[in-house]
Length: 320
Image 1 (cartoon, rainbow, N blue to C red):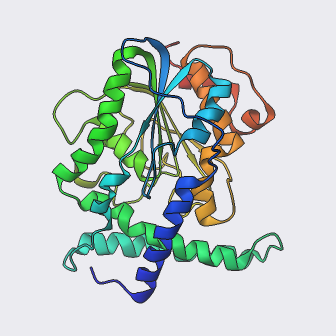
Image 2 (image 1 turned 90 degrees about the vertical axis):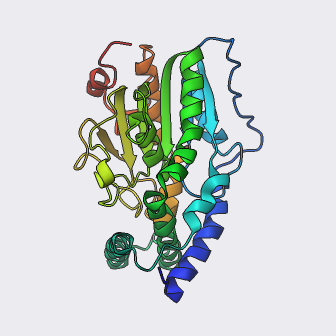
């Protein structure tokens, strides 16, 4: 697909921002929690997968450290697939009308959101930075959409990283939570459903998505993708920020998901990257993790704003 000068510029800026997103919130003083050896049985394992970007090992350390404060018995498994991300940076053929339509539709949504922010005229909004972040966010559209137009073998190769991690966790964990950001949520949804490959769907007691583009029309139901929660997932929570131009609520398009709207930032790219350490997001996921373990939750003010006790039965329907 031929790219305009502005699209090429946006992709270039997005490539730089990928490095910033990978390092966002990282604290070098915090060591990651290693995956326990398979001979050690643990109460619960949290499997984490990233979205597009040049992530490095340890990208989820801040999230792990914050969750560990609330769920001390949790082990963590970090999935890294960015070395396979070159698939997503390929230029699609000009003759692919479906991809062109999807990209144009998403670009139109972003332009509308940019105009909305321009009309806010808030003294607290750095309009120049907002403009730069809008431009950079546009650069993510192509790589995210490209996942849908990879060959089945290429998608399964990426999915295999997460599938292996979940299968390892299943062998030595009583409970499993899968936490997925951005395009990682699409990958995780496909893996948990197992709709592209033979075999039973993978089990997860809790599925947490944040910054997810799953409700974009190109992903919703495309090529036979299901539009219901994975059958072996007990509970699915999705967090989105209204200023995140990549994500949205999933409830309108999917059955079995609980949406939570949390304003992480008014800046679009910052909104997309700030979930990892945002106190309300951490509180929500930690409380859901405690419910998964049937432990008495500790509700702080931030948690109460994002999540109420009436949701616990839905998050823990089997009383696990």
